Image (tube, rainbow, N blue to C red; front, top):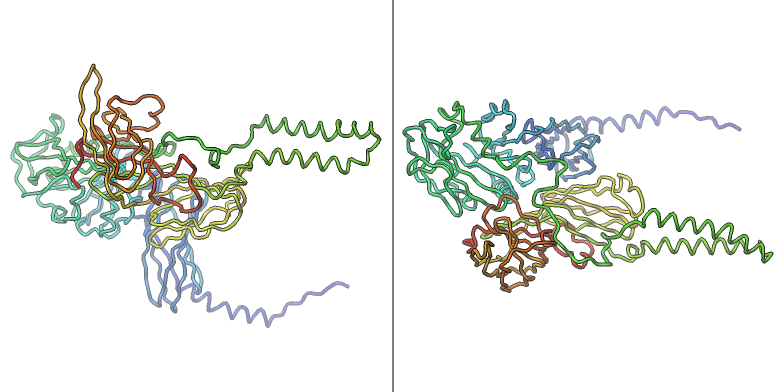
Length: 607
């Protein structure tokens, strides 16, 4: 007998009445966003977004969720009645066709908005300006190579990834109000290859801020009139008009590249893989503002810093030579197609013609119910053996990036990839601590021998002022690869005491390197003027002799760090620093990560 379905209008009306308060509360919630750097999206890296949420209803709490580019980031928020809160989120830049969405999810309801980001600057190099005045470099947009963007000191990102897409960063009026976190982020940006410009003119508020001492190129004395035109760097095309300049003295390893009489006009100071630069004049005030050489001068500021390419890895990320280990799951490979085809061919030959021919000859065809499963199990064991090292492996991790450190500073920055392997299905806490940015490098993940896992298996992150991943679900034999950016407090120093000498047309390096840090350094070498000089492994507290003759051959796997010029740089694989996921074991022979430790001179730097 057919069942008759009848609507209970009273229950439907009661449900509608119950939902009215939720709809009303959701209407009292709002979420909006704005890019920190307007009109600019880096080709690679992160897009900092200022997100504002508000609640006009009763007290509630929830999360701000950013979804896009194959990952999800959650930020917990508490929203008392009538509150407005601002958080900064970092959207990974990329070409994913997935919608980028911001949501405010609370017990009182949810609201969402789609994130629309502008197009990238293409092949142009982007100069950012931190100032109370916006649009100071708008005229550069007519250039074929330069583009500009700006933000106020209060909007400035407090993480180095918020600056990484910039070819250079200019500090102008108002930048003295930068927060401690934003200032530290800028120092880390320079450490990993960024460029920052301090400008002069009638005054320099930044010079009175002792927080810039670590990277400032000069110590300012007083403002002075520049009488008569001055060539910058001996270039007759760059004749600076008469203006007011700041008299200054170079600091640290800074060098004067242009001067007028006794006044340095342009001073550069290297720091890590980047540099800080000082212009004694104000490029945003007349007469320099309308000077025709200004655009050329800004082009020189970013010389050697071409726009990032999505096809190129980060400039300082390269592996170091290592010893192969059979217990390394990251060296596991799917058996060759020919081998698998041969195994399957042997299976079909054995299970059908051979098996049945033998049984028919013995007139025991009924035994096929036993022999076929037995043969199938035997061949399954052969195929399973090809992944036996993975099935027996424990969760493992492998760092593929580099840690950059400037001698005389405890600042360290790790940037690069980390591979993770999970032998067993489950939910894991990756143990991320102190990470400022993490992203899924492979948005689909992959399983051994398979095409990949569903997007639902990708890691999601929680941002509590640092990025964590407390609940990551994976299937059996799963690999994950993350991009990690993590500040590191580097303990101790590597001290170099050395000199060069010409012998028989070859430059030789004589001296020692002392490890005063608590970390072990394996496969080390010292780069100087394009040549690599070998070192024995360095244990904590140990002093070793530098191999005088440059190394050739396989040791060239230690790629020369960029932007160091004549400054020496120590490289190797450093162990003992907790970076990235703290889950599982590191493969033998590949513990730790690559180190790029930069000195200012062969005789070391002042601590």
